[in-house]
Image (cartoon, rainbow, N blue to C red):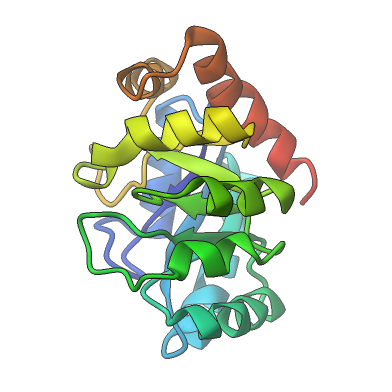
Length: 215
């Protein structure tokens, strides 16, 4: 059983159409997938309606959750972009955290952690204890990522999340046909980040399922 709550299609910088992405996820053993293409204030009105259309794939494939990844948006404008995305039909909100591999503006993690409408704080880099606590208090899931370069701080993220008691999920941040992870691969990513087998199982097979029950 597998759910990936952070993926991209050609609607942003991915390589696959939504239908191909979902079909490949189905073949890889997924039960559901969130399509979370990159948006900011300039393209949210275009991208979200197109992703919402992908829900029609539910009839033949696996469950599709329409979402977005709020990316490189100034911290004070993140909440506004989220509101717009949700009004247009986005059901799953990922915020592009302060990964060390991109010049994400300082304060992004904190802004996201303070917004209860955020579902996942993705690849949050060297996230601090106080920001992790705020995210946990708001029920925001913390991502352990399989994506190259973003994953260099996975071990730090696991340690801080463990100390705070924040819930973690293992996502692929898929951009191409070889990025989707089956359960065995996700377990390897979790182990490489220093998670125990119990923590990994929870992050991969329990927490994501519990999260989408609320949708």
